[in-house]
Length: 278
Image 1: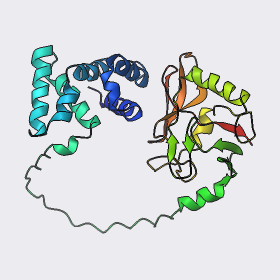
Image 2: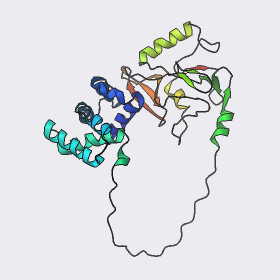
Image 3: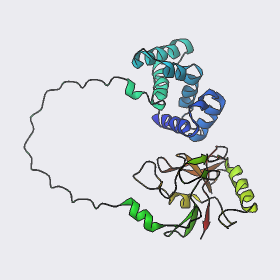
Image 4: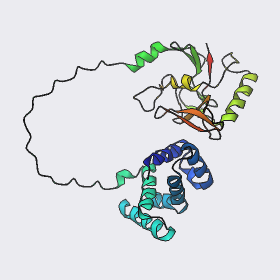
């Protein structure tokens, strides 16, 4: 079994919430989008486990050790539904990981080993100290706050809306959550947005290209975006305007929790952050 599929399952639940698992058709459709049609067996196993009550059994357990519950669920999938034992164990384990229950399981004790004689070696030369970088200072010089809920990136000369489309912010609290759109809905929404007055006095806002959107990624951080400059950013996927070459039904998006770019089916529902040339 391929654990990359498990990572995609985690991303689906992170983006849409655990309640998406109650709609098995939608869950399966999203997993197929996120995996780009790969890992068909793993997708089937995740959905089948959800169908057979694995999530509820894990969530509602109050008294039994979790390793016993997981073993029972694995046996149930194996004996009652004909899944081979390895596949059943992987399916249950996937939901254990996604539900954040791995800390409920005992860690195996390390095997006792006889110490091997160690030959004396010269102490390695320590590497030169790394130069420290203050991210906040870099961001303060890179971004110019326009005072109208937009900022200008002085490196790219792009002007960004500080909030995802649909969000309402009072300076302390996110009052309205960001909206999600399919790719085509996003294109249509921008046209309507500009025609109805736009934002901050401009009516030429657009969906960024994938290269433009990737300039907001801050490597080595999770979340991988500067929250001082872009507060209340949903830790989810954001659409770009860049379609996948030779694949009409897919386009690129950026996942701002991990800071990675992926391509997904245009029927997926993702957020929007608008940009314009300053």
